[in-house]
Length: 84
Image (cartoon, rainbow, N blue to C red; front, top):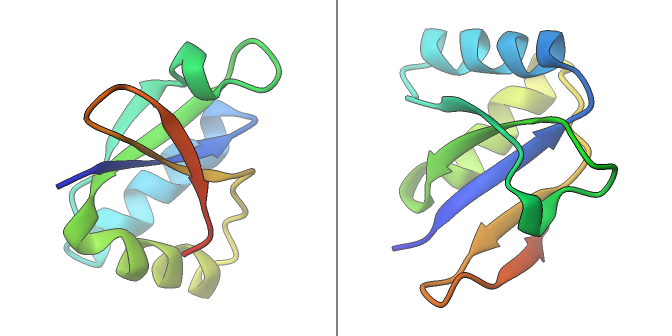
């Protein structure tokens, strides 16, 4: 199963996302954006499992929390942009 990353420009937005997801019963890890998917050098991401990626996107939309992009990291370490 893949891990999915939702990227954010600010730590505050990423923290809001983690809080909203926890309230919805979804575990999300707040991390620095991995270099493979960083578009502007630095930033923050939330990492979720593949089994909750669509639910994660729904919760973010419902709480008006905008992320920049979403990615999945393959077993070989390649990043692929996704649109959940």
